Length: 356
Image (cartoon, rainbow, N blue to C red; front, side):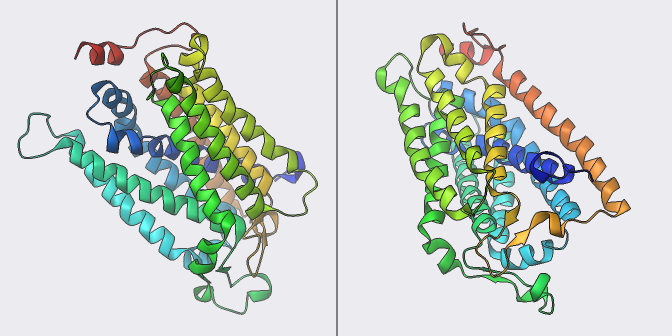
């Protein structure tokens, strides 16, 4: 396929967008962990969170499948090595994916008056499972980005060694300060953005206005240097990309702090789109290498394939992926119950919550 900007093939660019969309949509679930686990009895917050989460969790799973299919299409040579080396992380992630799905399905159909089931407890299990999935997802991203503790075989100069010999030394992975900072910083950042996304603070108070901004600044201060450290290479083009996510992340809580733009800041399509753009530029900082400090740092264009069948499968993924992203942005608009105006329009959900 023809090269695009900075040597990106279209298939690689599409994979970057898929990963960015997957991370963005799963982040919206991760943002809901704290309010579901700790503030579920607040009726207004419960409505704000669940009116978005209950329909969206299934589609987030679709993004996981889309990412896996495109990884198989675009870098099939690396997939066996990735599967063997990161098996434990994927296994834990999938186990809690099943737990998450099971408990939120039951919670959706349990009546508030049902004396045999406690809806809140079911949602708490869902939130804990989602949190553990988040830790595993961030660990996978950190391992693929940095390669710390990762040993992959079956490709390049190690092609004479079977794929099954690939493994990860998790002591090395989790002892690296950059990896720990990457995970902790991302969680704090998600919590800060989540306060805006689900309108969890009272903007009539000074603390309510600026607490999200404080958390976002702390999260960025931990996350960005950590991400830079685990992806650092002698790049000549990608240094500037790391500044764009910082600006976009700060825009959201800054807008939230002012009365005239607070509803725009928590407008779900706005936050989702900015998150997709931010994650995409973080990926461009990493491109074109994966497993940067492993025994074999892989160069993505060198391992992509371009057979006729894979090209057709890729085209199907492109069409389906674009449709999926557009529908999710539209859903974020529908769930928000308002258009992007600087002057808020009270939603039906908010009116219902205020009267209870």
